[in-house]
Length: 366
Image (cartoon, rainbow, N blue to C red; front, side, top):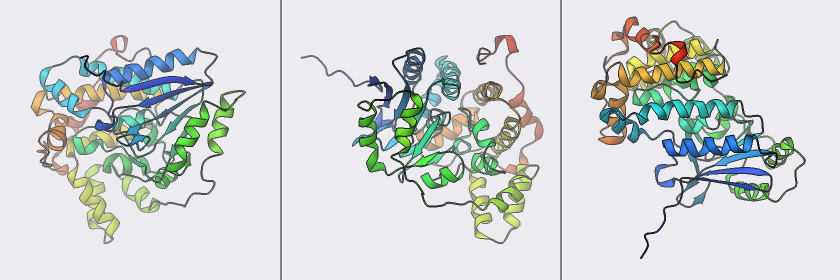
């Protein structure tokens, strides 16, 4: 008897005149593997030059069926194994993922991301460059990388630094999880719709006649909530605190303040990697003045440093993933262990480019 054929982790099809991508790895919350990145990239490149395809839509699946989780991020268990084994595919993963992020941000046709359920890390990388970003009441939106000794990559420095005021620093450092309405308020989503209406909208994409790509976007916008509930952030507090010069100053100000928001925010920061908090603050502030391609090249430098400045188990990222996803003891042994013990030379080392410009793995990005 033949063994059952495993379903592909990425399903790509043209329905009517819309290229449809479904991430289909529900047991892993659609965490991206290198193979998935390659499949998505190949489909987008083929459809870019296909006059039959007017627009692209992307969604995830959960254990119950379509939607429910767009993508929980990159496959961090693979990162851990590959880093310890010296697997060169770890390098390929980030080079190809960031090239895919760039392709999405610069895609010449409408690209519609259904950001239902968990959409974090790599999930943000395949959705923030979309021309239409749709969230639901189930959306959980975040860039939580400081919790695993990493930084908000996949263009995170680029899109977070462009949030209002110092909201980018706040979200990047804390890794705070936003609901759909909060994501809309933060400028990380464009529209909210009821999760129950997504299946009908998706099915209609293939059966509705469109004269051009913009008509596909308009059709989707007809299905969203016209006036979702307002969400706000303590913007004045965020701007005042997260504009300070250093992570130590930010945390000191928060711990000295009498209110619950400040205390809770400080407690959250104390759980993150002290070293990577410093790196991330520098990343976001540099990114604010950079174009997308240069920012992604900087991130490619940073991620190389995350795994190679202190290789193997000594890597802050390897340790963070161990604590969260491998041993699951939720007790990372950060080095340095305190925010106040990180020195500027340790931070600067992450920004020293490991390649000359002519040999950079993302030199081709326009």
